[in-house]
Amino acid sequence: MYILGIETSCDETAASVINFNPRTEKIQVLSNIVSSQIEIHKKYGGVVPEVAAREHVLNILPVINEALSAAHLKVKQLNCIGVTKGPGLITSLITGVETARTLAYAWHKSIVEVNHIDGHIYSNFIAPQSPITFPALILTVSGGHTILLRMTKKRNIRIIGETRDDAAGEAYDKAAKMLGLEYPGGPIISKYAEQYQKNLDQKKNNKSNSSKTSPKNRIILPRPMINSKDFDFSFSGLKTALLYQLQKDHNWRKRIPEYCFEYQQAIIEILITKTIKAARKFKSKTIMLSGGVSANTELRTQMAQAIKKEIPQANFLIPDKKYTTDNAVMIATAAAYKVKQGKFTDFKHLQVDASLQLK
Image (cartoon, rainbow, N blue to C red; front, side, top):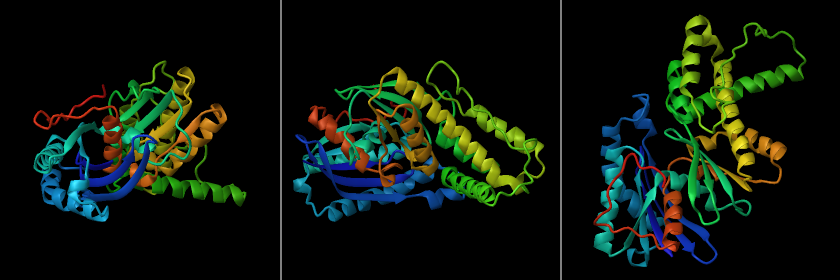
């Protein structure tokens, strides 16, 4: 079964073709084309919806044509089209949805609407490193979402925890702006944090006691809601704490790597603590990580270590890094599982829903 996936929820115009075997549920990725707008939005320090929408209009058809060409597939061979309905930026979503509707009509193809969060979840189903057993727990961490979800054997998904304010990815971007760093914030903060960690390790290896950072002036940021009884998240307070710390520290520009290290570590500890707590409560047999922030190497490493130590019987799955940020392979994959369940969409009634919630 050949499925064309289309993703335009934010600032990436993406299209992909997969071959899905409904019996074995094996996914073969035939193409994965992503046109990123990061360089365009860097000068604004974030995504500008109107600019993103215009770029989508320019790129959508060339990207789809390239995806079909790379897959060596003709339109008549396609079985259906999967497209992101929401959540996301409404002007960006409209381009993808209207294009999918038009092509479905012109090509006489079935169409499947996909929740963007479902797409991130199913990125773990593209090429799993180990069998997926249920119940499963999924931590989805991206620029706009930080959610803990529980999935049953029948693929039913239920939210058990989510952010009450800023998502983790958003918290990275805002911190980077405060520190005078470039957009997007996640990769650059991670880079500085890694640099600081290497310096610490080097000093330990050299048994040096010459560090100017004593326990008295060490940067310490809070871990909001880390010990709350629920599974919700909050990163707004962490962002505010960083702001106040920078205002008090006249030499903060010389300590940017240390600030990045502590800020990132606070986020990682909160994510891991909540995930382990939820996995224990719901007796999860598989724990998955997904979303753009799941590309963070330190988060991957520390999460794997924590699961191995605290819940060694659980499988831990993380998608290939190329499937963590917004892409159309994950959308096509989520669509494939909906097709298997017979969940098609009437293209006449398909409409964008920017605030779409998981059902």
